[in-house]
Length: 349
Image (cartoon, rainbow, N blue to C red; front, top):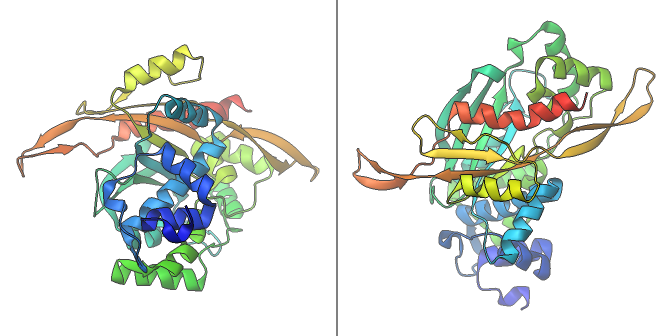
């Protein structure tokens, strides 16, 4: 089928960006919310652009996490599709970040025009971070959320803060003036002309990456000594820390993956209300070039991203007397899941 005959805007956008075969493979992987499958038109809504971005970011995560990709391919062969629940990323607040806005501001300027709003704030005191969940206003249950965390460097030593500042001060903002204008237009109109949406999407995908120069080995070790999370940010930046598959029974999935010999977390993290349960594969190991004390480049093995599983129960909302899916997160769960990269960090040194 040629791109001109594709029946929905979503199919047209992804086919234009990826090619027909590649786009079809991505559609085969994921459950696509009905709210995003709108007939072809000259303008596209924010929810369609948000879904296209989410699909591109999910695929980007799979390329970085072999175990996650293996699981997804197993699922597809079994005739199942993935329900993309949320993607998580990390930022740093109150520090020099070059031309990139500091903290979550680098992403709220993207998420808000796309139709996302804060759906919960989660203090992560044990790791000196704050997490915020962003859910889509137009279809909160079906469009993947973003779990956006900020690290607070002022909670750490002066040497740590100086090192963070040095590393992140090299950051370059991938959002150019034209893209910023398109985001403003999207925020105002809740839609964009199709050609503008196609121009904007690759820029948005590029935001979910490392924007600064890699640290030296010495700098990395200073950060790792006080914060495994900041050490991870120093090498991986704003890439998805993990992407999450919403499954009916996370316990059964974990047992099945363990039986296949895949490195999955032993403990299921359970929210205080009991309705949200999570586990994850251990973080992939990646290789990053860093300078040693003599200035020579050395290939260092560090933790990369990982793939997570979540089960969410439905409940009766007392205020509206309507049944809802529990879309909340839990500070304890999040800090437990974040250890998937912390433990790998410790093992790599």
